[in-house]
Image (tube, rainbow, N blue to C red; front, side):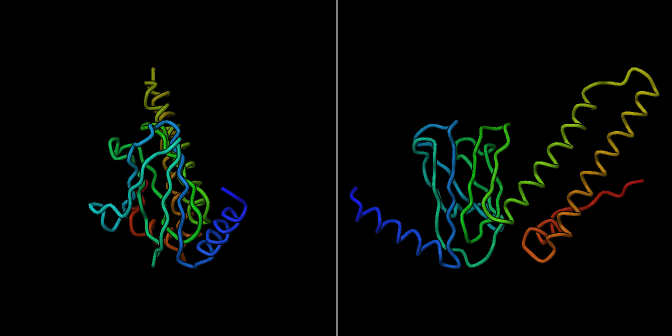
Length: 187
């Protein structure tokens, strides 16, 4: 490719990126094989594949236009549990897909960065609960302490979700949490 071709390609990419409804997903799937199919579906019509592409040299790519910010999932077609949830919105989004049970990651836009931060917090608190649940208490006192710790972690997790919803009440992330999360009634 010569310098004119590169300059022209850069100009076209810049123009597309400046369009207010243009999205680009740069995906990284180093643990998957060349030719593996990656699918993009939206939460409002999960049976319909919006787009699909293939892994090439550990990467995949989606781009297009969106008329609204939508909650979507990117997944490996032959391993649907290997997935990442994200908000499809104008701008650049990066997705790191990992084989299940490893967690995949998203970043790049303010909403997706906040979504990933929430997912990281919930995962950290869940690990604390998981550790306690897999180490049985030896005495009644230890069992009571475990119950208090699990309750505390569960409350922190709920507070984290509710605080994220509150801070984002005026955007699709806050509305998504409001529509899909039912806070537990603690005693």
